[in-house]
Image (cartoon, rainbow, N blue to C red; front, side):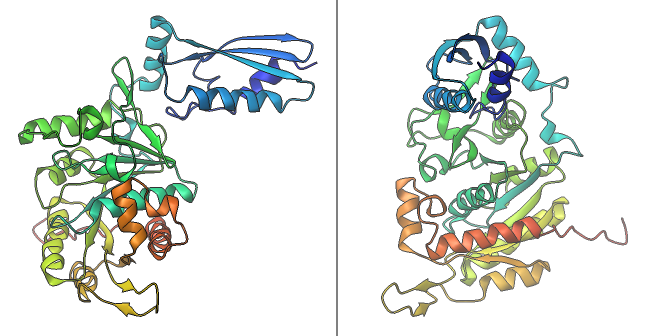
Length: 364
């Protein structure tokens, strides 16, 4: 007959999908009863009506059924008391009020994805890069820092979704293996405008770092707004060790503007990881001929001017366009597509790349 210790050991491998930690460690396992081979487990959810309760229940059943001698498993779902929830929130926040992401020795690589202008597919690159990194086994967070022009909820198929709130702690929504947070989750519709001045934007960005339980991340990707405005400065000031990844398209109208983003990063003291040339080319699905619809050389020009590498060239494909509109990122739903393969190669390059830091002047 199975023992409680054996069941707890099995349940220790079950993680809360939103928090990313063991349900045993989080104190969610409230009761275990064993009657011969029949096992009853009571699990206390963090919030009533948890959207992932079905997934948690299934994971618990699978874990307990794997124990020799277990014949049946019944999972009872309840909700944490106010006191239990407060204790859990305190444990998640840890002894310090600030986020561990802000610590200088944090192991999380914070990569700000930037572009000089809009319309170059920066958000599409960010979303697919995040999924590609997660597919490599990394723990990845994605913060939509383009607060006024957010698009990540649509790109990730999360329109109408809202994050779970534990007291004053927000839990990112997990999609395609990536932990996601966006201003769009707090609005009634994606068409509702956000009309904020710079101080409010900075405060919101800080809250999305400090009040969100990101968990232990290998990478946090920031989808910055286009241009060289306040948000880039906010990132540098709040997370000085952050790195910038610059997205451009091949034509000069985009690449020369993208160069300004890199120049600003150096001036602000941020390292530049490299350049991604999006919409680099189009391969005819019928004859295989390659066409350079937006010209050639823009990514190379930016990279050469900044003395950084071109880390990826992403082709235009029907799957990437369709997936962006339908909330089905090409990296998640069509991994054999040329664009998905390019994103996989980009993720591999990002893992190995080291940021180029601005060189101090003689006066410094």
